[in-house]
Image (cartoon, rainbow, N blue to C red; front, side, top):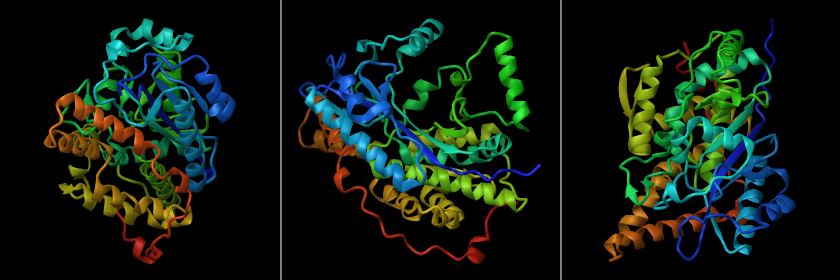
Length: 402
């Protein structure tokens, strides 16, 4: 049976934190009318998250990365402006530098009430934000196959997105603490390997028939087939404070999937590796971010992360050029040069301490940086970036498929 080529249209979800501009702590709850104002101005792309101090946005289906940028620019600016009108600030970071989870109020609705009743204290620590990227893969068999293959690249995407180095005022020593909090929940982490779409549905049936999990949306893997849309949803990343970094993550994800599909159409496939091996790279990415050396299991050696980024860009650049996102994936090199949000948060904190600020003052300076950086340059962010020349297809064919 022939495989339907994927459209690879995109949708991106981001979760933000609402901040009290005076204390720099999270708000206990937004003022009455805030969510209504967001929905009136921005439509159904804005909604609640688990906590009152959080807000989630989601783009509509976007035909290309330029449209993703346009929609996220509108959403980020809109939520930030409305937050200011209601006496708050908004920031994009996967953790707050010093807020305490015990102080947070939970949004009351049936889904969240059910999660709290089911998972109890495990839910209490969910003072974390992330970003999810949906890529449309209409053929279900292809969706499962590409999930199996794309899992290899998840640690690399995590490393580029890290934004959660602090937890309740402490430097955790991790560039991404969020996966630690989220990983305590059941049905999280890296996905299993599935031989077919039927095997995926068999697992869903076993979970449902035993009563363990009757809702596929409660499978919170780092990548999963969406239960709402014909998409493959990538969920491993921290939210990027800088919009350009978010766009790079989405573009890389699209280009990776396009490259894997192209190889499949030529009867090639990315080699499957044991989950424990991918988990090792994920752990290194979480700890060290872009300063990590991750394992290249094809070469059976560890390589500095910048070298691996160069290899990934080389691998996907033909498809990135074809999909109009070559400049966006090459921005990954800018992330390597100036650091992720986590690197820059730690730098702001260290500089503040060196200048004489105490620990609490330094944490507040990190909040100020996060608030400013979340919307920095957004008014001009839709200006096109001139792409560099891609290599020829002949040069590109020297890849690692086998």
